[in-house]
Length: 209
Image (tube, rainbow, N blue to C red):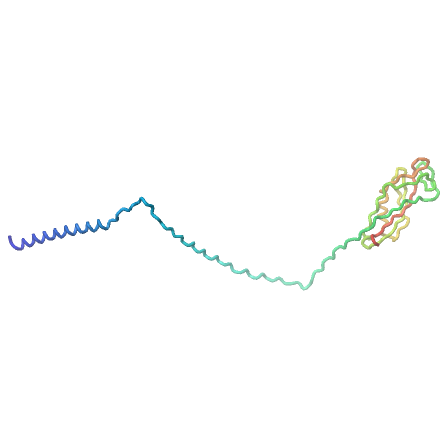
């Protein structure tokens, strides 16, 4: 056997041994690096870390409102109507007892009598006070009205006549409208109701006036 062939055989054997050693060394290294399974019988303690809340973005600021347009001012002050003044209170209207008209009367049978003919004079049953006129209250005017009226046998009123008024032009209308609503117990002659004339005075007086 030649020397060159022997060298080739020895070199092949050495290479085979080197390869085997390399494979064994790599296997041992892999076995050492493989992790050993841990004991799972005990619970694992995990620490939780609270993360800070994310910062809110600042809201967008709205631009400031523009100044309103100034309206032109008027150079005058409007005149307001003065409030209506409260009217003064008035005292109740005084209506004295009626005075029978004196003079010659007529006989019974739908006729009218006067005071001198009656056994019993008429007596007022319902006498509604005339409303105090607005104009008189506003001006604080007091006054009297002398009125003549016819009391019928059934106690109703008619033929209202203003005899006098002081002052003139304030109280006549309210008396003329109110007196017909009055009611009387009529005068009597021999127990029978008869018609008769009555004259009375209505007084209007402001409180404290």
